[in-house]
Length: 283
Image (cartoon, rainbow, N blue to C red; front, top):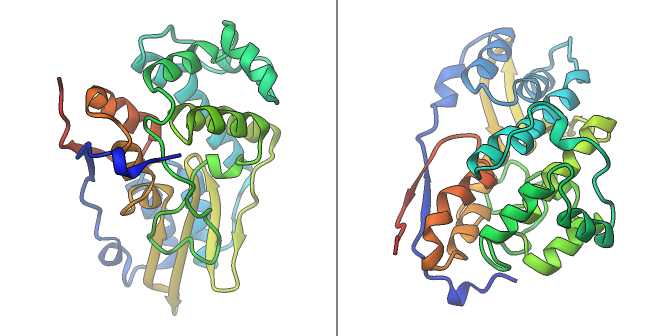
């Protein structure tokens, strides 16, 4: 449980200025917008393309590549990016994710003691962040009704696996912190490989909601005579960085003696845009 009464770290993550989306798309043709935005925001291109084409009422929507995109990004983080960040050996491709990830608490405890798969990565993360460090509280789960509201919500890959026995075990022992979120990434990778991800949907209000490598991506558009009048785009990072959201709470739960780990914590929370850390104290 996050105890905000004892967290006075003063750490803050400031996102880079966002592009003026409305000005970029206003008056442009729908096909032009559907082609332009995934090139401007170059992460999760398949998810963005699917969401845009759904929201803009365009044909030719291909969802088959979504799972492959998500699995590919998860594998990159788990087997290359994060091991390099933590000084661990790199196992390119799917090597680090070979074999079955444990599906219960006892199996997870045994797995953590071994050398198979991502066990060394998980042990290292657990060693860098003690229970209660880098954690967030239980936030409202993202839903179609509130996904466009930029409030603190659990719009993350963890939200797709909250009831999994390993997730519940890690949450009970460590809280909703870095280890919990890395475990969620491993579980989501397995789900993507199985093709067991939430299906893209278009709500009655015209909001396209599509699974992506960081959570759920949402787009709503107003179109008139084939041209875009207005477009609203919300990413998992928007909710991650919301006031009082996951990022703010996670940084607040780092004691001053752990400020040196703040950049690692940000990397593990994985915002899709650069952030600047302010207020870090180094002993």
